[in-house]
Length: 227
Image 1 (cartoon, rainbow, N blue to C red):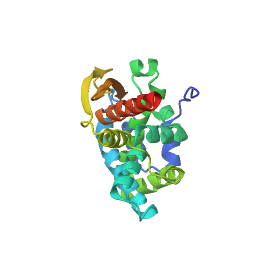
Image 2: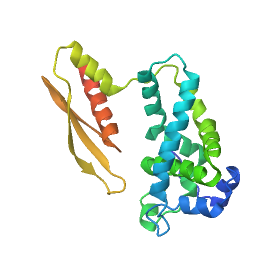
Image 3: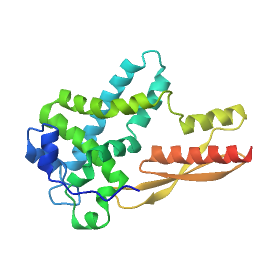
Image 4: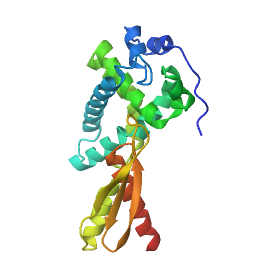
């Protein structure tokens, strides 16, 4: 378990990142639970796209011989919530967030979904503050280690499950959304996957894609256990 987040002044992060407009950074890190959080979700959207572009470019350069499928699996892993949370912890990003009382009291500074979103917000804010080169420099500095750590492309659970059912001459897996949990701004999706002749298994995730991957991984584990 991670240690409790130490709250830090936004000026400290602005100085560390050579952020030009400290007011923009303060507004960017104002969570939607605060009255000043109007920019947060728009910057999250922007940061997600900038991150994807920079990481894709880094992968093309680092792995010139890999197929599009392998590169896509690497990209999906590198822009996933786990990777974003890892970078957020490096920066102690939770400590710089401006949260509403309810979000603060519920441990918002340490929630993985909140930290992942905040990391994308920060990238979007860097892009607005100092342009693409500044955002690229930040992503390169914090994602190169993650890129180098994966010596082979990560296994895609949905692809692996599909390959298994095709080899077993079964119909393709069927995914069904069972419902969502949590608040509207931070939902958790629950999705079930079923393969003919095998009891269905469910998985949860912060997006439908993540929940489908979790369900596929759970079904693969079940198949491995019964072999």
